[in-house]
Image (tube, rainbow, N blue to C red):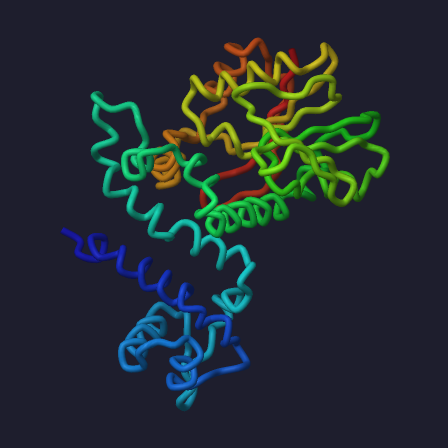
Length: 322
């Protein structure tokens, strides 16, 4: 038995505690602090926190010169509270999501039809996020998704035929990173974003944000519809429902772009388990995208490789039409 695998969770929890303490905000690769200074700034027990800082050294998160701790080059981004790395740690390792793993084995039972997250919190993931008292974690989630979109925006723009269209809507588009990018480069295009908001309709940076639920109704009449990093959140029956509502809203000449990862035969990662734990979602093979599209009355007319990969897989634009 590999004890290193059994105890790997300790590293994750220690890293979360380090980021959650806000200590990285007072450090950089150039500006160091003594343990006394950090403990005072973070209002923590000095002797106990010293143990955590020493452990961060063993993980190469920190380095020590004389009596001061510094962030290593590899982890320099932790000094920015809005960096992708900081947001990723604060979201994935948040106790609300961490606890859900304890119900993962129970969620696999045939007697159950709920995700591990829902078994833990007695409500689905997105319902939990939309509670007023969970605003902080919802903001972290929205900003993290925006960071992920920012990273691939230029690749998306290269492959989506923008010329000749006058209207675009991003379904489940969050804070509107993609729509804002399109509007910035193509001011003539009417850009809308639909998601669940605490307002009915709002304008920002030339983009219109519309409150809605893609399981109920999607606005009709746009040239281009986009569903980005959404379908992998849902099991097949709900993914089909989303695509059916897109089909209903689309004109005969409208185009739907599904931006998502496509699973490869040898593609085995923990991401599938993670999506299953939170939402019963998963990555799909191309044949599975073809299946859900067909069930919704759509067909795949093109697939563009964005040539952008993360630790979870490669990203593609899947073009669909009626």
